[in-house]
Length: 147
Image 1 (cartoon, rainbow, N blue to C red):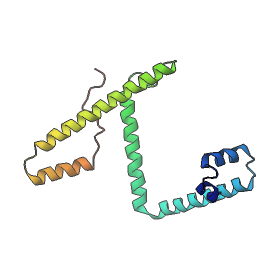
Image 2: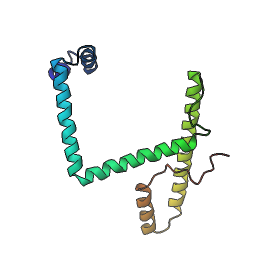
Image 3: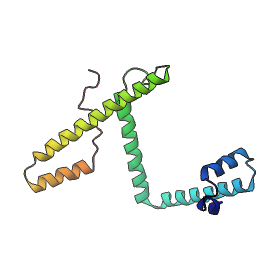
Image 4: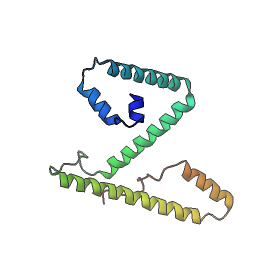
């Protein structure tokens, strides 16, 4: 299977499409499933054993949740869903929301750049850069979104 993909005799998507169209009892399907379970088990054991990996994953999940909170804050109304029935209007509403989010992030970067330029000494500038590098420009608490 891997050799066929590497030799470009078959694409991975074609192979998986073929596997999905056949029985779950097919030997190749069962072998790939068992191999996936081995990789999953190894990852779980590594996750349990490695506190640095756990912290990195938790940090990334926190970032993702922060972005979701930002998206919910930008979405106005109750429930905060796209209520348009036509696909074109749904895309337009999503594009407007993305534009507002990008505008807020851009404004934050401009503000942080201005704050950086106002730092006179190298130590203060370095401390500020360190804080910015370990923080996030996705912040909206200082902006009144409902106006």
